[in-house]
Length: 199
Image (cartoon, rainbow, N blue to C red):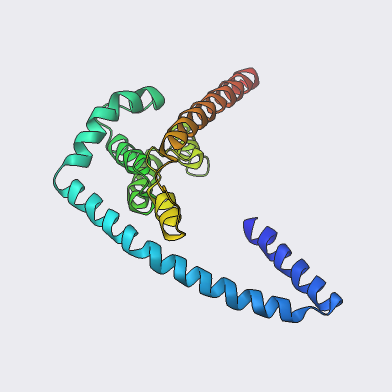
């Protein structure tokens, strides 16, 4: 769906430029945007490598596992159908903990492993379980306490105080995650009632 939306934007823009005789503007924007993208990537790349390395060291040192253990009571409340010793819960905790630190790329492998564990125990492989949906909702809502990637972008673009959005990010994350979980629970209960009526 996203491919169709962006593809449509591109086609509309190119068509408009051709109809108005402003093809030179497209060529200029392609060159300028390409240069800006490369500069932004080269500016963020070292920061991403640094934090990914720190996360890797933290994982091997057991720091992330310890954080995941500390957070596991909260995650057991969010995922009540998972047992305390479920391996998926450990991967979920690691994924969300790393996301909270703003290292989204480093959290992806843990998220994939969590989904794989949840899918293995899924009785209906074509339908997502409640835990899978809740996990996806949390990831989509953007659980972030320290927006490392945004701080990197702001620093690269010359912001005078790149970290001044940390408190706003924390507030937005709490509100966003709470509302996402609330809607998730409401829709789950509605679906459950509908299923009970059918049976």
